[in-house]
Length: 493
Image 1: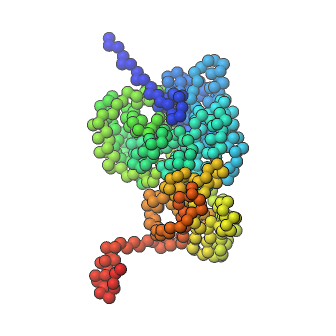
Image 2: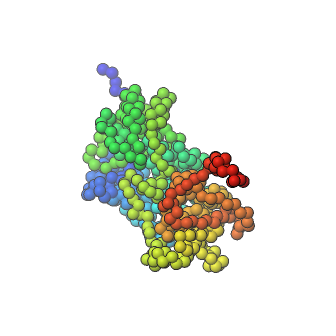
Image 3: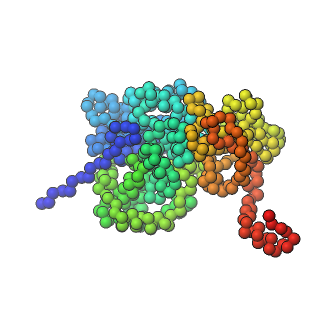
């Protein structure tokens, strides 16, 4: 009788700035949040955690809003101290509401709550989610997390759903970011087709990828089944599914294993996160997860996948845009209710309706000193004063550091914040986002002195409300030339 083939070894890695080893497949505990499991038996779930740890899947990802997830980890840590069970590597997230609270005490309370629930003295990786980059609260909170890191309560600081422009802005500003958690799959290729992968490699930021199996869509369950209705937000491609199936059969593994291997092979990806319920049948999925580590995609495999991907429609925008820009199609559905409208009071709405002059103050220290406001609206015309990358955080001289492009990102965030105060939806960063929004702004260059050596960019803006409602007509040079040929009385310049 022949001997059984040895089980593949679980791949492990270290996160940037850490010597702590983690599994390259992480147990994601979002399914313990409300709507998935209404009641969680903490002791039972902690026991399942131990089963997974014994098999080598010892890394767990959770958040402050994942129901009882942090409590389950706390229960497991309690049992581990008394029974000698193996310890886990546990990450969490802080996703504060848009309430304008930006004090250190508020940040420390959030971290202390997570530590208390998890029964730990330090969180290995605390990941931060900013709902709105126009609100400077996220810069204050990340500064507070740095202070808590120095105090020993946090090991590493990570981000969730952060686009390339704002990740680079934070890195250029001096923040040490270890990870960025974003959706990535053979269908959602924003990580590699945009700039994010290259920025992560250059600055040693590890990607923690989720959505790799698209909620189970990339599995045998859907093979040869009637194709669900297609839509622009979730482009489906049956030839890609067939390609994955062909590769899976070639290697003797599941479609899911091939889909996971594809993402793990992306240079910036440190690990993938797979949803785990921590129930009695959780161990049933261990062989499928282990299969991922037995696959080594060949060049022929990659060519086959690449050919099938040609039929895909790219997911629009950059990683994380779905949390901050319409149509808000996240893995959890439409989360646009998190985008607050608190800047628009009834008084402002009434003033706008009457066509009165409305002044907007951003809170910059220069506004009261120089006697001006960030923006003024009169009727449908909005004029934004010259804006630089002034830092709202005293420890930073300029957001974006010495990078003109990152300073520009922050400046446009400030301008967007001013326009949003009047209920306008505009683009979020520089050039490529204007393209996403279908806007080609007029460009004027004025050379003038700036207010400090650290300020590299200053931008003024003017917007007219409602003009887009009547459509856009674009006339090219060719169109003008053609017109002049048919009109002998007109002289082109």
